[in-house]
Image (tube, rainbow, N blue to C red; front, side):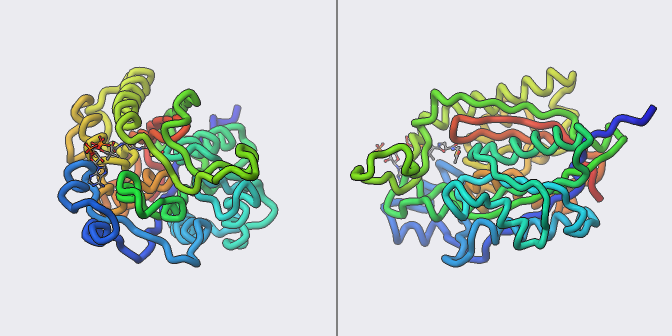
Length: 330
Ligand code: ACO
């Protein structure tokens, strides 16, 4: 009888655009202050892509690193899945198709997933299922965002929060459960859709109506649900797997707001040393946020093979999800 095949997180890569938009820069654009932004969000600066730098370009740079670190060639990749809320094109072609094309990956399944800031956990879930079904062997998953393209830089309540960037990972196979993606849970509740939205598509407004051009968010209401959901998520996944928070080597939450992360961390008793924080450098990069944070910890040589990671995300939809992963890479 053949051994069971598990899905494994083999590598991680990320890319942050070079251009920095600091809180001081924002002070010149809207009625805000560095002090307000740092106190309320923990964000000090964020990265902004160039006009001609597309979401797919950011995704390609992150993907190249992930493919190389997994010791693979592009011909080894048998599926490409991209999570984004800022695709190169509205609806089609999928950004995953463009990323695959720019990487020279041909004739494999490629599609996008729309799950806002939970997007990376959603595509991780899909990749795990495709690998463990035995159909696929090396899946490239990418969370990439050019959020600056949907921000209103006259609206101080949203433009200070978000940034651009991308993170990618290779999900491969293993027979060793201690190097596998142990569990993932994802969920959604569309009753909250109105609290966090990007521009409507042509299908949802009459032709003569003014188009909603920018991202809109009821920050305060999102904040409260985010803290509760992110906390419950961790409690549930740990208890389902008979684990305690002390067994986690690295807690990698969605990087939306330092106050949200601190509230969750304190409720769950995670020490700060085990919590990966990048929100001060990149702001909220939505689907790219968790893989960018994971990459930072990896490049800082904090994450090593067999380490137990806990990912925890929440975003528009509302969508949410968490995952327990034994890192399977080098
Ligand atoms: N600078 C100065 N003052 C500001 C700014 C700013 N940039 N933005 C808002 N204010 C003012 C408001 O106008 C308000 O003034 P008022 O009291 O005179 O009316 C005051 O500050 C307080 O505003 P609140 O919205 O209540 O501020 P809050 O403490 O809630 O912080 C924030 C706002 C940072 C947006 C917070 O609510 C938050 O982080 N929300 C959650 C965001 C999140 O988690 N998103 C995750 C999902 S994102 C995704 O899926 C794409």
